[in-house]
Every structure is written in C-alpha cells, then in structure tokens.
Length: 214
Image 1 (cartoon, one colour):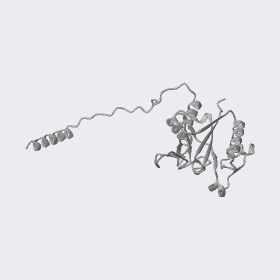
Image 2 (cartoon, one colour):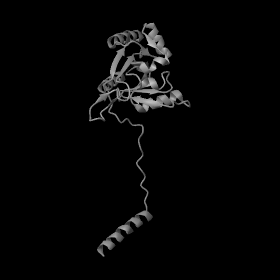
Image 3 (cartoon, rainbow, N blue to C red):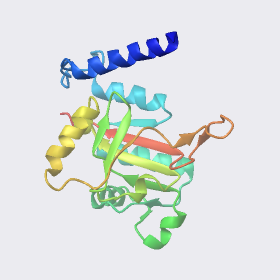
Image 4 (cartoon, helix red, strand yellow):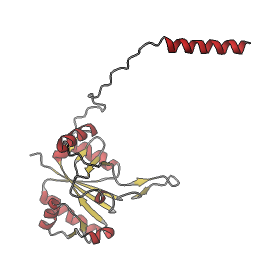
C-alpha cells in the first residue's frame, strides 16, 4: 500500500511538472571571447613550441634561399633520392635549388617524401590546416612516409576560429570539399598501449616557416 501511494505521489509530481512547465531560457553562449589565456609571445614562437611538443620538426627560414639550402641539407642527411611534388610554386623553388623531384604518377606509390604548401598554421595547437583546393590535393598530405610543409609567417593564425574564418573568406562560395587539420606525425597507441609512429600517415612531419613579415 505504501509503495503504491509513493508511486502515485511521484507520478503526480511528474504530471504537474509537465502541465505547469516554466520557461528557463538558456544562458546566451559567448562565441567571441577567447578561451585561451593571453600571451605576449609571437605566433611563430607559440606555433614552434606546440608543434615540436607533438613530435613535429620545425625549421625557421629568413627567406626562400635559406629554405632551399636547408632543404637540400635535409635531403642529403636523410638520403632521399627524390621528392614528390605537384605544386607549381614549389616546383619552381626545387628547380632553382637544383633539387631532384618527380611529379610522375607512376612514382607515387614508391615515394618516401612529399612536399606541399598549406592553408594556415594554427599557433595555439601547433597544427597545420590543409584543404583539397590546394594544388597538392588530398593524397600527398597522408601517403608519404615523410611530409614537408612550406608556409609563410603571414599564414599564422592564433586558433581554429581564425583559420576557419579566413578560409571561408578566401574561398567564399567555392569552399573546399575537404579541410583537414594535421597535428604532428601520425601516431597511435591502440595496440598494447605502445606508441607507433606513422600508423595512419606520415611518420615525420616537417614545417619550414619563411618569414615574410617585413
């Protein structure tokens, strides 16, 4: 009897609550305020710190000539025979530096290293934003064992919000079918909690940043 009475009381309260609903408007969401703590450090320094923390390899260059010189040294050090490149701007840099590269689709499955540009560098995350609208397309960001990215300091943005805002403005009604954010080399610890690099993409990720702030 007591159980029935208690049950009826609970059901009655629920019925009354549903009948006599009161509006409780949600607190307005602030989309504009920064969720990160402010910093006096420059964006390139913030990016370099965050990027290297997640196993990325960062190289700062004062100009294109320094980029070519350092890239040539890296190629010799890693003993890469050819770089896969289909971006015409990057091809001109490689030709100028007499760096061997290939754009032949027949070589694609056997390449060890590819070079691309990017859309933006997200400083707070140490991440690289790429899109399918770039000359390098989709494959070159994920297939090679080593991925080299060339970027300029003007492509640095504080966070994802700024990157998305800029890319919408850039492409307007012709938005890319794919926008990706790359956060360091591919890695996983799914198997026995052992970290494995290069599981689903490049084992090595290099970002060459050329200063064009002057």
